[in-house]
Image (cartoon, rainbow, N blue to C red; front, side, top):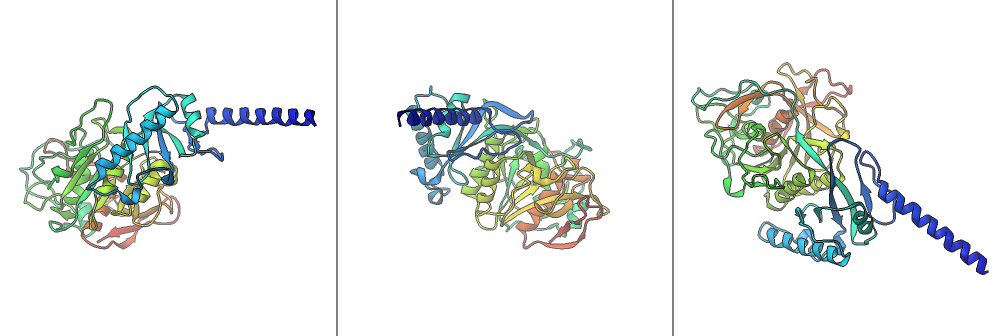
Length: 408
């Protein structure tokens, strides 16, 4: 009998060692470990941020419930989440470290730096749902800028994409467009920027100013809502207020943890009638996908399909699929497929103009850009001025299932 007990104990020790080894090694390409404890999600791409993680807690373990979070108490609830995470750090006898971001509305969790050993410890805590390695996200461009610079003195023109989707409608009484991107030129004369609600979610000592230093976010905002004012260009929902939710730096890059912080902010602050646009992308991310799905309960979320000429199901947030979520591919002015565009149904819902799109740009200027980044805001603008319909199907869709062309 004693011999059997010793053998069983030895077997349990071996099994425990195997599990610990699996947790330490992680799993490549965004696959979660199949453990009874929390899951660890790691990635095998060059954009991972060493030592940086997103820790997602189980909702039932928290003093703050996501359903109780609103725009009035949002900051206070973030402080509660900070305190909760710091309590766990203290319990585990980890050294003190800053909490980079706290998520309270769309997911429940924090972003912080951890060692491999600390990750292993947290994975055994029954309050933790999963832990995901942080990674870099980027603007989704199909080509370099063209025709940039210049002020707004030129006579107003209507870009071809605006006409194609039935835009250039009065959006002055529409809801707000939340532009989760590189920021917006806050004083561009062709944009109605809601500066009071604009925020920056850059970390690491970067600018806390939501003003655009890259140009991409301003371009997106102009397609959605450039003002009908006889100068520059006109947007789909002309004159609608645009909110800068800056998550990307002057190079058009930012952390996934920062992007989720922007999504969480929109989820807590958007209102009925608003719409949000995400013309950015990176590797597959369960944390970001879940945040986008939850934010869609506050307002429609419009996502660029991406520009890698691959299936959109391989990248986030494009692969997020659900009610009130719209993933958008790109086409040319001849209704033909843009060669750079990602594809796949699901998650792609609509195709929209994305090649050679003229719009507003940083420093009061204008530029012509290409990408699914340019296609998505056409759909965002449509949603601000009413229900979305279709007008034909794109030619040459590589998946053989032609996407419907979005139209007001």
